[in-house]
Amino acid sequence: MQRTYLPWLGLPALAASATAIATLGATLGATVTLLPLAQAGDLFTGQPVDKTRFAVLAKPVGRSDWALLVLEQLARLPRCWDNRADGLVDPSLNRFDYTGICSRYLDSNGYSLRIGQSDLGSSYRLRLQQQGTSLQLLALNPNEASELLVGQGRISRRDRDGFVALELEPGWELQRRLYGQQALSHVYFANATPLARLLASNAQAAGSQAGLAPGLTPSQATLQGSQGGRNIGEGPIALQVIPFKE
Image (tube, rainbow, N blue to C red; front, top):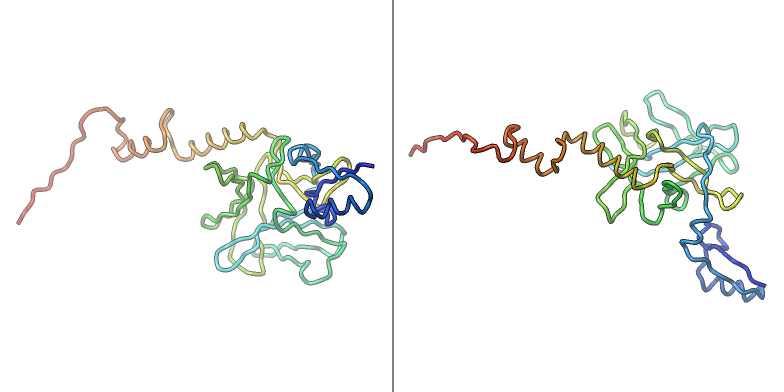
């Protein structure tokens, strides 16, 4: 008898090392085959969730850092989170036993990135970045300079017990990871647009925000700006000369 196991599904028995899985196979009297990661990745699909049952939140950590988490309301009551009058979110699930009532997705074991039809959890990371009173959720590849804006929220004030609600950008949604017809305890930040097209659109938007003229690189635009809007190669630039006095 031969059995096939996927150790990266997140299930305790299947998340063991190859040695442990081989031992399990020997115990069962079966030949264990480990699927290559690329082949296993093709077996996962995503299914949109009921967004009213989910909250994407940023938790304040220390004096300036933030941690991303996703909450899911499984039962109708009690509420897993509540909106506060100051614009922040109260994680009320911390005040009762939320077993069977709420689910928490706290790190890359609970959520990852899916763009087009590809899982990008192994190459892209989600990061929170604060700019003034705005908090941005970014997806980035450590080996590339490009960043994708996934969502953002407004920081009304910093409170260790108040979380910031994040709204996903157009085109982005939460999806449940599926293995065949089985729903897994993992959610995607998903976008149906192919990655290459998404990166190109993001680069074009970034260029427009920087005020780049068509055909100019950022360094050329900086040089042009330092010359008072003159185009490169238009001729000599008049400089003000201040006489030296002893």
